[in-house]
Image 1 (cartoon, rainbow, N blue to C red):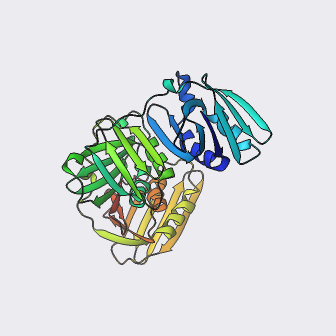
Image 2 (cartoon, helix red, strand yellow):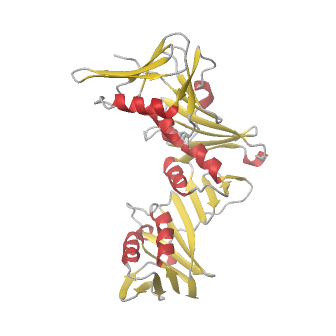
Image 3 (cartoon, rainbow, N blue to C red):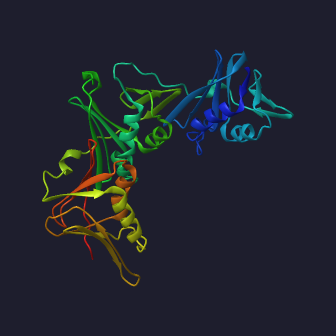
Length: 365
């Protein structure tokens, strides 16, 4: 393999894939990035056997071929090279010479034959959706997924294709975020539910763009997502997701309109007092006002009043401050509504999108 490539383009491509490179593996090749030169493109692939990411950059190919090189090391070398033109030459024993200006390196790689092959998909479960919309759905829900490894079915985001709707759902058992999108073009073959691991969702949030579509393919235990110049393949969480609809309250006593950023900042300031993030902040709704407060024994108290449009009954309810702030931080709308009944019933946060967030209340000691 022999080629020349632009330094900035190569670094951008490596940056897209190197987050997936394994940091703990018994297979040395998983510490490497797979470089494949073919038809004026240099393809870059990394995998940890759970997630695989592939992208490509333009290159002048003098001799086609492939090898794998230690990802972290070559990224640091390429980053420090003195000129924008990089010459890469790999011999038949996977020894790579790197030249740029007066700089010269020789790096020993591992044969491409040892790199895990890209998984294959049958093509019967295929769906396309706007990257912008899909990113918005994931951004609005992903933070509610659980990090508790003892409940693996909650360690990801659910994609549910059913009855002409795509539901994106995340929950940790104490709160749930859901986006329900009408998608009439869902084929019968695509119907089903799949759990995408949190790590995969985080990579998608970094890579999805405001324009173009993402092509989704699903097999029994893997998902493929292709968009722009990226191809991401991930294993799915092999568990059944709980019935998320049963936690949505069927009604509430009051629906209160709130300025998203105003309330988020008030909660954030009051929560500065807390020494334990499991200590709640209290919301007291009265005519025309919301009072956000917290009391911590042996520390003190904090209180902030916010003007709101509300003329209903007085309601006091306590929530985990982080759980309350996360949807407010990840939504883009100026206003949200909060459905509440009393201090024992879940609160339901909504905005002007097909989104809702169910939050269980906490008891104030």
